[in-house]
Amino acid sequence: MIEIVHTPIDVEAVLESVRDPGAGALDLFLGTTRNQTKGRSVLWLEYEAYEPMARGLMERIAREAGERWGITKISIVHRIGRVAVGETSVAIAVSSAHRNEAFLACRYAIDDLKKNVPIWKKEVFADGGHWVGMEGSGPGVSD
Amino acid sequence: MISVHVHCFAGARDLTGWSEREIPLPDGANTADLLAALIGAHPSLAAWKAFLRLAVNAEYAGPATALRDGDAVAVIPPVSGG
Image (tube, rainbow over the protein chains, first blue to last red):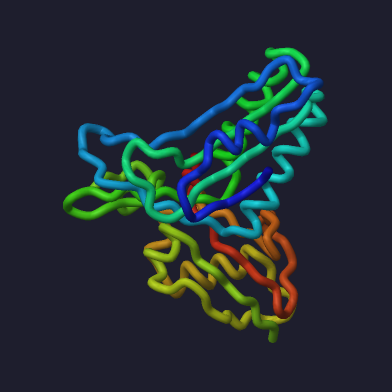
C-alpha cells in the first residue's frame, strides 16, 4: 500500500496491509504533528505534495527497502492537506521474517522520505505560518 | 525557442507568487538556464538557489539537464514531509 491521502490515515488498515503468515515481525512508524516548534504554539500543519512524483519516489523507497533487507511487505501512507495537532501525518508499516530487518527497513523508509520525497509542511501559528526549512528570508536568516 | 511548463511548489510558490506558468527558453537550454531565468524574474529566489532542486517530468534532474519543448519542470524547495 503506497498512498497519498487527503483524509485521516487509517493506521489499523496500514498495519493490517503488511500482516503475512511468513512474517515474524511487524514494525509500525507513525509521524504525528507537534503542538510547538522552538517555543511557538502550532495551531495546525498544512501539507502539500507534488503527488505523481511523491508517489513514484515512495514506490522506489518501498522497492529499495525490499531489495536491501528482504522484507516481506511494506506500506507507506502520507496524508496531505490540513492536519490537526496530534494527528498522524505519515504511517509506515513493514513486515519481515525477523525484527531486525523490519526495524532497519522502516528507519530507512522514513529517513529517505523526509530527505527526498516532494512533500512540504507548513507550520501555522496564530500570527502566520512558514514552510519548514524555509523560515526567514534566506538560509540561516531569521526574521 | 522551446516552452516548458514550470510548477512552483510550497515555499518556491510563495517567492515567485505563482504556481504554474509556461516559460519560453532558447533552443538548447538546460535546467541551469531555466533556474537563472527564474531567479532573474524573481530575485528573492537567489538566496535559496543552493537549496532548490528541479525535477523534469517528475524525476530529479541535475544542473545541466537538457530541456525539451513541452517538458514539465517542478521547482522543489527544501522538502519537509513526515
